[in-house]
Length: 488
Ligand code: MN
Image: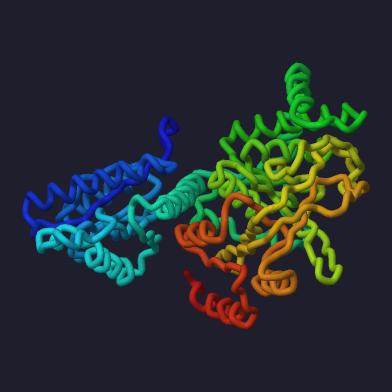
């Protein structure tokens, strides 16, 4: 993809020659006005395409969008009636994400002046129905956004879908570096890397841990000193063991050099394979996540790639690797305490993180430096990607992160507490029923609708657990899903 400009979205307006040249000029004027108005309010540029009126023009416009490596998606709108048999060839040529915009130029009907000329031009109400039918008839995935084009809620909906489509475009080029294999005997971190590449585009490949060790050894003292200065500015140095912190600085620099040399935006490691390293990367992995890299512990490449993809979607705000660790089961106050051995991303921190050094207890290496902080309160989602055998399932749980009521002075890791929706009991039961993993992406800056849009674009199953979740209905949905998604 051309790195000089961000993704763009092509804006296609459908019509036909029936209305005459004057009417078509008016359609084009209205359509340009709408595209310009929206483009100024959306996170990515809309590229206006002259009104398409024939099978050939539609096919050509769809082929041009598809051939544009910077195009993340197509928005279609029928200002007038555009007979949809003319769209079949074009839509078949289009595998990009599509948003069907169902809007209208006028906000209100001009009751005093309305005549048949007005009726002949302002026909989205039935032109878009013809358009909706052909998507449905062809079984083509698309997002539908309804409302007047000047309505802020409509722009917000389109913006949200655009960010998802741009993340899907990013995923197509994402490379994930696996340093070491998956943790021995663990099931849920396994998966079909070929299927993941077919769906998301993620390229997941292995590199020897020894190669990382060489890069870490090659890091110069001046570079380490520079990074230690940055640590001192950004965090509270709450340790005397600066040698341990310096080693994490070397790990961060060595990892970054290795990742960048291979064009990787995400990585995994495992405490079971740290040959040639003195510590498990803790602070180093946290720092790289803070810079937007995906990370998965214990060889979990699915969570690493998903984290990088959701970090792209959220512009790297409030998004981290997370693990459900232990429960608070005090009646009426049930909550989940989430953390990891070390690796939680500081983009979710409530306050300035502290750098501390403590023994790990597993892995047989030196005590690693890590960032310690509390996660902020607020609405968030926990997202898990699991392999169901030949297909992938995305599971999204709505949660409410809470102010952590206890200091936990002897727990030297970053931590978050949250309550799942619709409540602790149904939320946990539903998660287990769907097969959700212990590793998740926790994000305060995306939501269930965006995750469902992502799954729709990628072409995988999405299970949402939230306010309306009912266990019996979920059980039926999952059994139906097994049938619907088998062999796709
Ligand atoms: Mn873990």
